[in-house]
Amino acid sequence: MKGQQEILSRPVSVQTKSCEADRQRDSLCPEASSFTHSYVKLPNKKNCSSIPMAQNRPHSGRQGKRPSSSSKIRNIEIQNADDVAVLEDCTDFSLVKTISRIEEKLEKGDLPDCLDDDIIPSVGNEIGAEAQIRFLKAKLRVMQEELDSVVCECRKKDDENQNLKSQLKDTEEENTRLQRTINMQQSQTEKYKMLSQEANKKSEGLQQEIIALEKELENLKRVQKQASTSQSATEVRLNRAMEEAERYKVELNKLKQSNKDAANQELRTIEELKTENKKLQKQKGELMTGFKKQLKLIDILKRQKEEKGRAAKAHV
Image 1 (cartoon, helix red, strand yellow):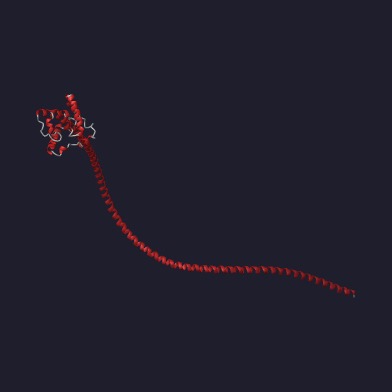
Image 2 (tube, rainbow, N blue to C red; image 1 turned 90 degrees about the vertical axis):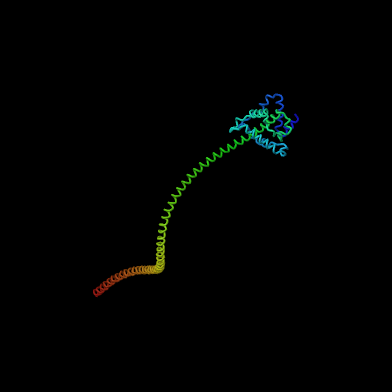
């Protein structure tokens, strides 16, 4: 029993406790031992966190000393894993069948003799077949966990593959759409190229028209320059004429003012003459009245003189 504990403590420290518990259970109920390790979790229900536990399983120090035996054990593990016959969905795998096959091999004596390495050391020859079966059960359980982790990883890869396929399909659809877009853009490019050629032809015609219009504009500029020159001379003459007109206008205003002053003076003179004429007419009337009075007085005096003469003659 002590040698079995030393042997089982070398491969993995974690699995030894379960192996010892299985050995104790098998000693109590040997018939139930064949069903103890037959429970297999389906890969779709198993948590993928078992990958690091299976990959980081420690090995004993004798592995570096005897690499040939460890490689043989690996070959045995690969052969046993091949006997497990993993399918695509890994649901048909059963540890019970595998353990039963190993038990049959042990009964027939077909088990290889390379079990004296770090996993089953040389002391394992002294271990009974039942302990070896329990050890192999523990080993198969570890392999089952590793297989489950590999299956989980495969399913992850399948999911990634499906995602990549969907991405590839999307990329192909995008490529098709882009190809259609490129074809459409090429047709539009050809159309725009034809339109560009027509526009270039029209541009050449318009360029010639622009050249003709520029020549005509130059001619018009020369004519305008000549007209501006003649207009400048005309403006000079017009300015001179306007200056002379202003001067004549000033002189005319002066002459009008002098004529007006003279007319006013003549009017005043005429008014004075009219006033003086009225005075003379009045004086003439007064003189005529006085002259008439004197003539009457003379007539009266003549009659008085005549009367005096006749009276004197009569008196005489």
